[in-house]
Image (cartoon, one colour):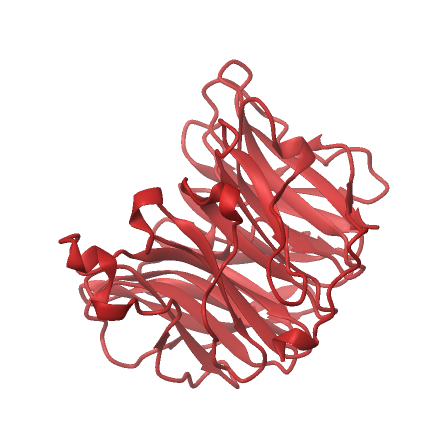
Length: 391
């Protein structure tokens, strides 16, 4: 089924806009972060782009949202989402220039309909690492919530009525209490409305990405391992490196009519650090074999901050950062129907200096929107944005 997606024309390429700076307040001692679960830091509603991040401009860590209508030359001044210490904001798009943002604040997770709208507390217990996904008429949130000694992954439906946001009952993926830590959930709502969840799980004494599926976002299938189990228990274990080599930070995207694709960081080749791996669920609610995403030029170094981005038309690409050219740059690879292609640097997010932490989305027309961090020791770190069309 994967081969049914036709390769894009070989002569076509992404045509990039000039980059813009998103955050209006910068300085040598101000440090923005974009490290959300499933890397949901940018979304597009109609022709309006929304970007979320956290920084310490106020002396403590607060979360912010900035938007840019297509007709505007720059991002509008950002609004603060939080009141207390805030971490790992995410954003997803509704229609009509509206967004829903979510974040961790004061030990619980919250969400807010924007513009306007009041903050809504999603969790009763201590919780964090919230993420959002929208599709097929559904809006879903997932987070890591305290359950006894450890956190476990829970999922809840969100409902939007006029200018009001409401949350339904939070459903744990597994009814049993967790035996070790679970965190960093990723969500995707497939074209048929089914929900797939992936997360980092420590039950095997090393970090393994697990996945589960639900037709109704209320009853979930037993978790299954996302990354392939190395033969003989794994090279890391055979060399005395503990329970296994580990994998982390799964991301998911809906793709095609009913498919879901996962990308994560995997340390099975532990000598070069984390690599980017992918797996495909073409609609069977089962992921297939793992595929390496980065090309041979990136094989001898670690990759970071990987994300998979797809749409219903079959467009699919992965982004991450690595330092193959001497400093951290943002790289991307398009799926050509049979494999991920040669890695290409995002033009404005490559070159001297440090460009890292990419997050991306595809809008309804297929335009790609990317944000990243650009670090400068004197001027401070900038949240940068650019968009690209496939021509």
